[in-house]
Length: 106
Image 1 (spheres, helix red, strand yellow):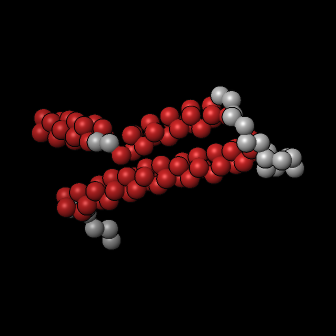
Image 2 (image 1 turned 90 degrees about the vertical axis):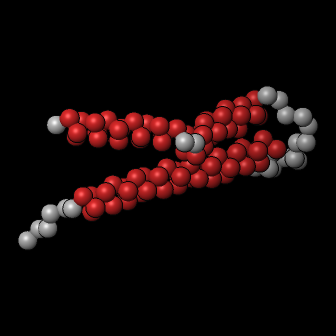
Image 3 (image 1 turned 180 degrees about the horizontal axis):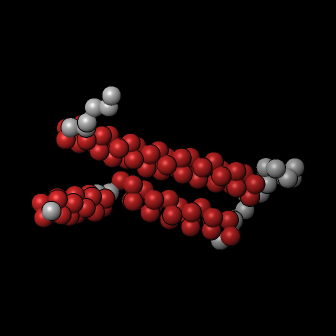
């Protein structure tokens, strides 16, 4: 026998789902950050010549060495802004208001 969901249970489920989604977004950002750091450390080591068997190059690197960290860093910053700013609250509040409006209407 299945029990009907009460409005309280439904609201709690919705809160849980929103919290679960939020945690997934934050986790995704931190994974992105970890991969960014690891890949760029590897690229730095490769650009210094640590894997070539030759002496370490300590000269001034050219622009080409900075393009990956720079542009990837921009996308990482945008990802962070997307996850950690309140932009979602506006959209979420609008959706909830519209749902309530239609529920009241019907």
